[in-house]
Length: 210
Image 1 (cartoon, rainbow, N blue to C red):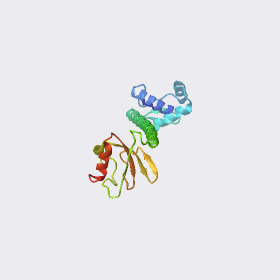
Image 2: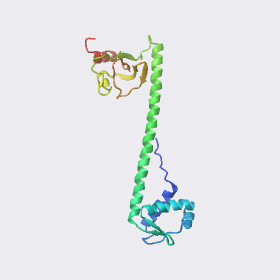
Image 3: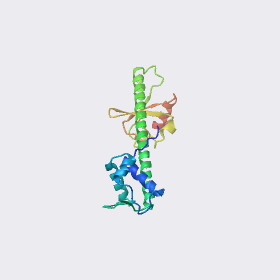
Image 4: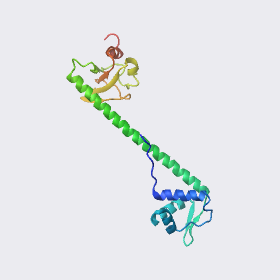
């Protein structure tokens, strides 16, 4: 996934540019900035956009708007704080957008996994006698040690080398339950793996005597 560029509002870009110009020495404390109409022409924006930019700079004490005198540079130090602040916000917004993008990708992957599992289960049900990839089904009985544990906590995979692809619970099928799904009494889970995993799962669930 490519990084998304975070677009700042135009008035904010103008405020940052003016703050950078003050830092670069184009303006000093006490200097008067160009009037709003001149700034509008310089940035090729509306006077309202310039007004919002100046008000933003005024709020952070970089400039002071004095009626009858215009826009006066008030602080150089505050320019650096202001610029860094918006750099941080931009970085956080970029990270947020990247996270949202990754979550969307994960949802798409989980959807595709679910579709493939459905295909496998459908194929298994229709060709149960000849399908070498048929999922094994096991029931969780009352009193089993894994009841109440998550798949991860029970170390299911480490003990069986099998992957749980679904859980039948109260008439519903939970596809691709993930490592934090909890085993509950009367669950029937479906697992796939090599041929020997059936005996490994059976031993893991029910012990040597079953």
